[in-house]
Length: 257
Image (cartoon, rainbow, N blue to C red; front, side, top):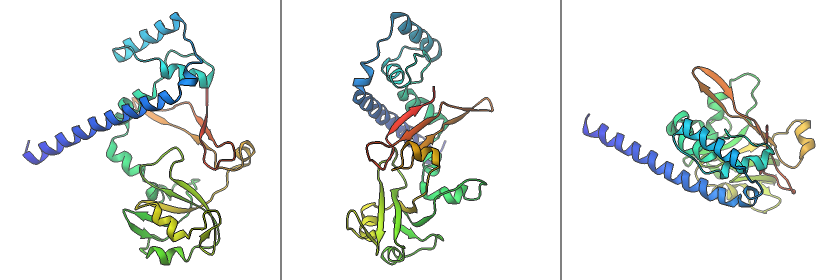
């Protein structure tokens, strides 16, 4: 193995380990925030033994039960084979979603290019997209940001970061009139500058009547995870993510049992 390839390999391994450590820290930090929910659930001795036996046989060691208690508090159902988020994010996901590929498919500015021609799939229209500081219009033609902002019609738009974001973070809904947001009184140009080098300005789409009746002030979403094992596609339990309390961003999960 040449020196260059050796260094590249060692760098990739270091990046993976660093990512795993940071994810572990984040998951333990998040689970502590759910302490009130976790404390509502008491596992019996028999349930604890069943969980230990299952994970020792399949994972080689015992695990913390906090995630089992948290999921049971959500679902109202005990299951010995709940899969803890910390194992999902630090063990399974890095294997099934290689980081480099995940970065590519996770860039929301690439959705139209990757999936725009898929039938029966609606991708929100982007009027402004910024990729690593390069600004483009709806036809992917390079434009000056201030000039492009001045062409956007009055109406409701979504502005969001397109990389390194999730769970409703870094999303803003603007009601524009004369290129100025009614709520913040900032111009669209000023708002875009605050979003950094990777963001988009998109149309505000409408949800179906059923989801609108559940909560009309936000775009409620179904979260579906699929995975492949031995060339078969499986679908994990679905989750419905809802907003609440007048909010415009979904924050609450309702999971399929």
